[in-house]
Amino acid sequence: MKILKLRISLDETEIYREVLVDKEITYHDLHMVIQKVFGWEDYHLYEFNVEGDRIGDLENDEFGDITYDSKTTLIFSDKKDFYYEYDFGDSWEHTVKIVEELEADPNMNYPVCIGGKRACPPEDCGGVLGYEELLNDPEEFVEWLGYEYDSESFTVEWANERLHDPNCCRKGYTVEDLAEMAGKSTATIKRWIEKLEDNELKDYLWKYEGKILLDPEGVPILFRLS
Image 1 (tube, rainbow, N blue to C red):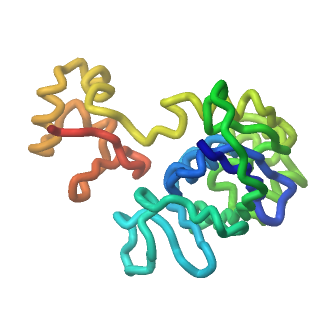
Image 2 (cartoon, one colour; image 1 turned 180 degrees about the vertical axis):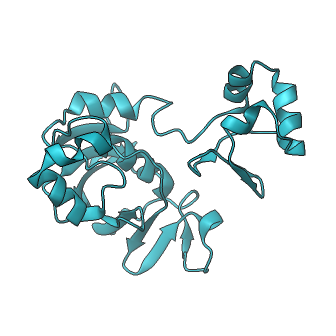
Image 3 (tube, rainbow, N blue to C red; image 1 turned 90 degrees about the vertical axis):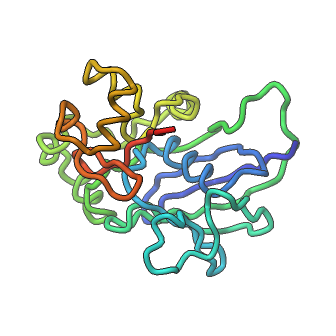
């Protein structure tokens, strides 16, 4: 098996990560790797740009701008530099560099983070300008964040814990989660969802869009009715 060493830098900051990934990784799976090793929480939309080709989630492509579906397209390993944008409001732009191709170590569990520097900015802090304000006066943001932000708090161990945590960056709830919250059976939850009744789930569900349930913050909920 071949693997790729990637260096991913958050533009206009000193934040970067180095990771080893399977050469046959999809863009969506690479998106999740970036989310986990940086410290993002996958709250927002994303898109890759590879020499003008836009690669993203076709389910959220309202204007037909996406060239390739990120969930089924393997990364173009011959393109040494490409770009990744997360959260089109704050516009966090990352540069992804394919440093080299290597033989996989059969004793290593990929993907794996092997290096990096500095903590990820907090979600929704206002992009690069908001991040700079946070660095200049962190005490002003303590009440809003609910904690004191440490811009240097990054370790490879922390990144790898997130990489291999199945609950890290999981959006919303499964049917089983909702059943436990409401103290009901999964069959009841499925019936409520299908009928969209006003019931004990009202504290967890916000609205229904097509086949996607959104939580009170508008985050899609993972579930399967079948």
